[in-house]
Length: 235
Image (cartoon, rainbow, N blue to C red; front, side, top):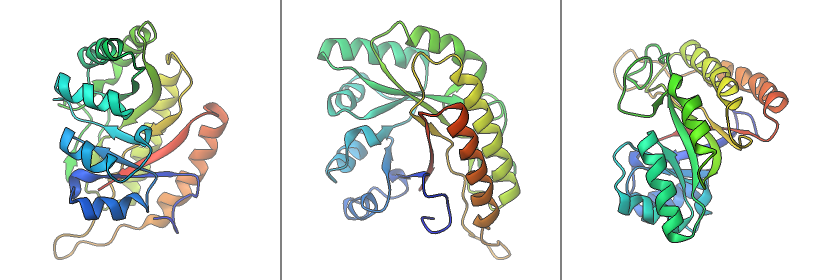
């Protein structure tokens, strides 16, 4: 990935793929950030010594005690709902800490031909794209450090054309939502979706065209959102 994809791209490892501490320690030296989905995974990530702000905590079922641990540690919360946003702000106020947050968006499109679709209609993950502007307005009224967006529409995809189409739509959606953001966007996480061949007849994903398209689109991001870095998340 480092050899093929643009140098400026942030690469994150979603440790739910394998949270074994030795694996996470090894991966932490190869990537720019880690993504966790539980308090247990958060502890494993923090034990690597990585800067906590580069640890993102995703998942729609976070309990208050998990939010408290993540905020106290300085990790970035991927907000999955308006309710979670209010709870994070309240806990941050109680702790006297400014929570770092990003908004996870459920896009109106899906990643075609993906093994698991996480966009394109009602889903358990993220805030529906049409609700995000109002959420951002409210976020600006709260004591929260807005970092950016996490927009993820599918996984386990072996079609470079489908991934390119989804990445283009994701970046364009990021542009539209950034107009409502209470602060400048620091990170635009466009998810992953990169598949691996699992069955007879499956072909390896061709990263070349994906890398070329990302290079061009990151130029667009630099012009329209100059403070933002583009991230992908793989596991």
